[in-house]
Length: 292
Length: 292
Image (tube, rainbow over all chains, first blue to last red):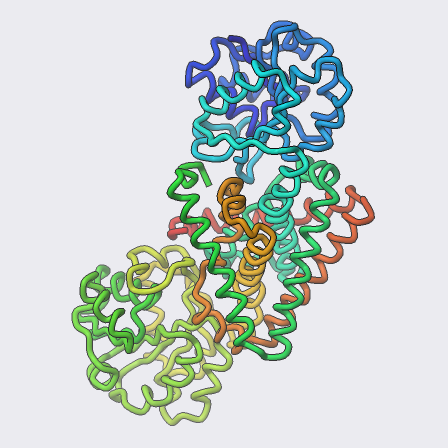
């Protein structure tokens, strides 16, 4: 089987490496419109050959779109136009509803399987790609009933080869959960970094005092703005709701501090501690094996 | 030299283990009013012997107070009352001003060195203690001019033996920086966990979808409420200010989402990315060696 990966960043590059290593595909073609990324992908041996999109669509059995979500929406219709009849297209975007809408009426809609492997790090680009990124994490397949069964089957097998746990849901449901469980974490981290950087004009103070806790909490603030701005755009409704809910609860916490009601702050923290159970289940399921 | 550690949790237990391993002290006495913690400390060999506070104060050359900050404020005056003339007392509290106030007029004030080793994990109790927790992290010594030079010297040597970087500042300055760089991260994480737990009543949804990014951002939400409520109480003024600043910036981000001004959200994220440089310096300084 021939695989084409469009977008050779952290996710695309890791998929290329992992599927070749697992023997799931015989050949991997790589497409990237960034010349520097092409060059890095060559040096790092992420793919067997770099090609253009037209060749990739004509030759590949599976095409994975691993570019920012706004580019997925733009690329998906012409990619479906130009694939061979037996080929399957999937995407790895962090939003699903807008991408699904971009091909709602497409005559080849059924050759597309919408998916989202829920893995990543704060790093980006070909050099961030590595084997094992996906192991134990969730791969969400959305609106499977809108795709041909053979296409769903091959994409399920693809994520199986990446050792991911398969989950099935509707696009809208995915986007709502992702807003809370993934997108909101990024905003909380981006804005925490901003708040501390604004106050500590002298970066040395942060450098001197920051402990592992701070590092962990602002880690996602290193993420790529070019990747995240389109996610916020495509999932604007749910993310705005999630951020509003976060701000409301922070205000309650702030009120308990202002009122010096420390029993109340303690109660809030005791409720937060429930997350231990959730994260421990995650660890037991092998999620901890993924690179942090 | 004989060391007494009062409070055999993550920090106290790790100090006991590390200073004995480094050969900095000959004997370590442990004091803890929790019988289960005493038993765990015995089983884990954190200390050479468990003793009561009175014996510890009478026999020790160095006494480290590693209990929650409200207990430090209560314990510090009677501990100073009962130490031998040559002994030195330090504390490891995450707040410094209120603790300093508790012994401002004490006749033995100069035998006390206020300090804060900026290291920790989200775990607590004797079983969380481990060697290497402090390596490469910052140890802040506050108001050194209020302490006898021999006391400052021995506490500097103690943190040197833990392989920490020494920093000197005033208590008020420490509490302001700690509010932004440490205490605020904990609140952002506690409240993020609450927001997601409230929305995802079915914990399975979080378990199924959470990726490494979410785990990292809510890690601190596992922290001990009994330890943190007193920190919020003692550093209420600065923490309220820091949380207010965080909420203000989150509101701006929320406004840019509501107005669909994604160029603005991108600009905020680009500013956040500056944190990369700070964290990379931290990594180079060896901070990354500490357990995360």
